[in-house]
Length: 400
Ligand code: SF4
Image (cartoon, rainbow, N blue to C red; front, side, top):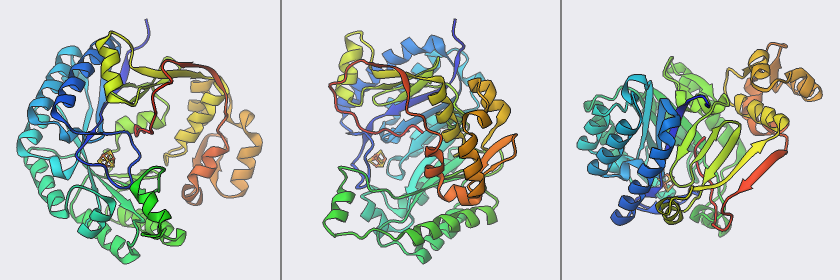
């Protein structure tokens, strides 16, 4: 019998409208589609439930808060009935919300059902920039939603922000940071805007309607974020994440530490028993498969031990804590300094990583170039890939 899996991700694949920069898989929110999806999700949950003993649950998307209060009630009730002792064993339960779809009833229901953390996509505190991103909400909605969530009893709230938006100046970003801190969240996540394939934003860039922000201001914005967060008492614990001490996102820490998790819903990923898998990124196909009693998994794969070890280091380097030599060996059976002696020596010489034989982590300089450091550890080997239904189109999903 395999060990119970302690981390559960549920993907709600609907959004009110597509943001201009977004390449994640999502669908327009239509009532009939949502009802059909919820029925399929319940069946997927039923099958997964015997493996689950969740300490963290993360309901992400898409836009989970697009669900009505009644739809949330249905989902939360099913979770509680399918997973024994859910409320007593859970330590962190996050729901992602868009400021346009927060209501007092929803907020009260979530809080009363055991949800204790909200992650809200504020993205900017300037209506012109929100419009440029194609967001459906305004700054006023973000303020109002925050009040509603606090009135419902939420005391652990993350706010997401994007920087290097076309036209955004360093002074505007400083003002955003000042106002973000004044909103008194417990956690902040900030991401540099990226231009993904097949997005309106990339087309605007290619056709000259927006200009790419220079690298130097984007770097300066990131560094301003680091200092503003530190001055306000937040601890940076991951490249893009800052938390009040003790309020780091435990669910995401599990991803970065290479732990097992189960993902449910269209396009959700999971990792358990040495295999990682991804569900089909198409809600209609997902529902059809489940209704016919089939698996919604699109493909699963088992990495070779070396490839898995490389992936573990690449993820761990995202965290300020990095990884200890003992944790690495316990996880993989390898010694870090035997697998990558040359890489470690070079990266130390380049002042990208700190490595004293006991712990490996990025230096502040390495954190600015984290992706290229991580790439040095990636080993492109897969022991076995099982493609279940390769026919459907696949889009990126955001689970990590
Ligand atoms: S960025 Fe978020 S809210 Fe916007 S379309 Fe993508 S998943 Fe939906």
